[in-house]
Image (cartoon, rainbow, N blue to C red):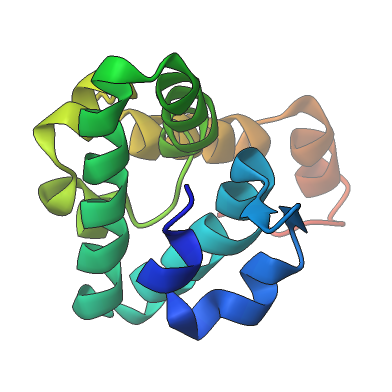
Length: 139
């Protein structure tokens, strides 16, 4: 994580806001800076930014072979996010093999989870009552 500021100078000020003793706090830097900017890049289909973050994740994944802290960092912060993320189809092709393995990434899982949640909300008991009472439009 020590190269985070050098690797992403565009986000330097934000990253520095999450530093302790001149070192980024890894979980916070990823969760509060890197992932939100990656989400923005995915919405905007900014392949250059997407590739830079995916390359960074892959470098962390490869380095984690000799550093269990990095393994935990990527597995928790990125792995959990991958399970529920939006625009999965824009990210999946660019994730490296070690990132996928370490994060236990299952292609399509995030999309399925979001669709399931939307379907559950659409057919919820309260929604059906709202439709029945004319408070909500039926789809």
